[in-house]
Length: 277
Image 1 (cartoon, helix red, strand yellow):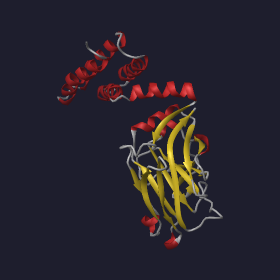
Image 2 (cartoon, helix red, strand yellow):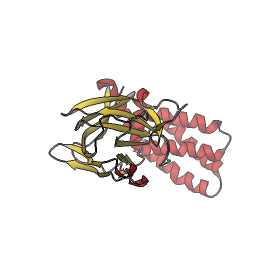
Image 3 (tube, helix red, strand yellow):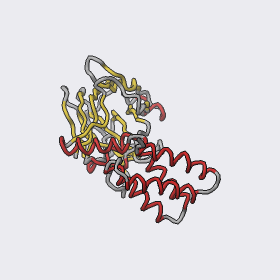
Image 4 (cartoon, helix red, strand yellow):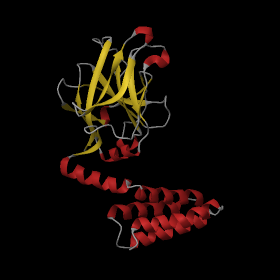
């Protein structure tokens, strides 16, 4: 029995060589024909049909056949990768619970996204984070290390790689985290572009000393660049998020200095990250 994914894979197997031979219009015709077959059939889900209808509409309206072919290909890939099915599960969970899971660290560190250290040593400071480590006894990931203003620094941080799973935050009004802290103020950072040193949106929070939820609405995130507010930036929206990060710093998200900041060790446990609606 031919499935939706079989139809799309067959179309790519035919259309991709046509595109590579220099005929994007022929590739586009192949992809649109397959999409219409799926839309008119009985095997696709409502979400898959919606994605394909939208793609066909946009692909046939653009002037460039090359761009149209890529619009269709990205729609096919979103179905084949399971991203559309994941969005369906997110929508169902959000409607039922008012929240949905984005990342869980309760059973270990997921293989994706990867998390990279970004400390003040890049500007001559001497802070040092230990990366993100799984603590079985806590059933959580732990961000820890030592932060100091020595050497002119004053921050330690982690940042994820870009990850397709953050696309689920399109359905969210903000981020909900289950955390356990040490009395320090931390930041959750969100990036909306691929520039490593670009603008990031930040939200200050203090984690409770026992496991507890903290809600971070997107509307309250502040756009910053190297510790300074960036004016005239639009509010953060979930669908824009490509990377997330954790930071401990002597500065607040709006560029002020934390009055009770102290040099020394830090430790923040994170059990999960969810979106809330």
